[in-house]
Image 1 (cartoon, rainbow, N blue to C red):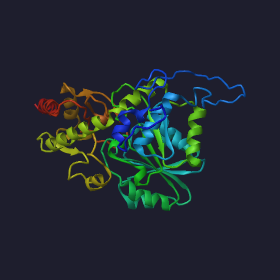
Image 2: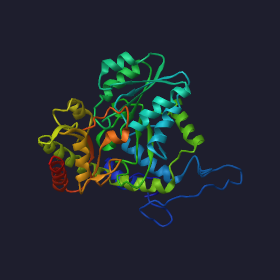
Image 3: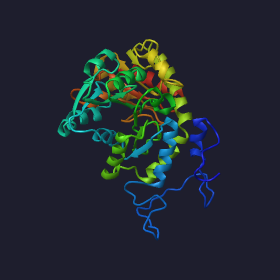
Length: 388
């Protein structure tokens, strides 16, 4: 098998595990090398037949990881890797024009929401925040001929609201706009936004795509190689926001095991959500896999192989009890981020600060790959200790 061949399978799990089947041609290694060169030799005719010119806009290791992600998302235009999820999102919005209008969700990643509210107006782009699970509200907020991009996040962090991607795509496209989906929490394992009508997919690849809490990375995946996609490519090239080769190598390693990790984490999250829903110290569990979740029916239609590894709990006793619970855990690490093999717990309102839509009694849980019984036992003892 030569280095450009794909693995001999139609199953994305197999193709991801073998990194599309690439074999390094000199040593015959099954793992691609890390290419760290910053500059490349011109041919005698002054051309670059290798396709590589300089390290800022392009890198062979990054290309390899992008090819795997594009395969996982079934993305015709391909994928672009960035130095962080925020860098990827900023590139998507920076490719818009002065005078454009943007819609974004009221519940979304807090840092990006803050950037949209403060930075887009400085660029002459207006933004309105709307509940994306309310299709009537979206219809009312769209400005035909002016709205250029509608950005959604599903499940929406940290309340895990579910947006109907297919229904929203129809509304957005009828208005002549584009639909972008932050699919960080779902990952390609659970949701295929492009197949549901999305034009652009964003991932904070730091999270479940990598899965090991050792890489900061972001990604954009395109449905079409159109003018907008080319402007995003130019944003990364000119702005120097490409992911580094070592980080791309680690991300590739993480994506090889995505199917195993995501399946195990979703199973544990579902079981924990069901058990915590009847816990006497918890007033509510927010998880789309629960029938009582308002977005459950939509999630069942658009999320494959389970409902993801993220859930939130609202603790009886309010903010003090929630913080005391997080402080009393032994296996759950008190840390920001999500999607890693280690389970994390966080009092999210403290992180987001003033203006957050996150209730102060809420704890966000990122379920890792530890044994489910150990995770439940640790939460149970922490909740009981917090409540005296």
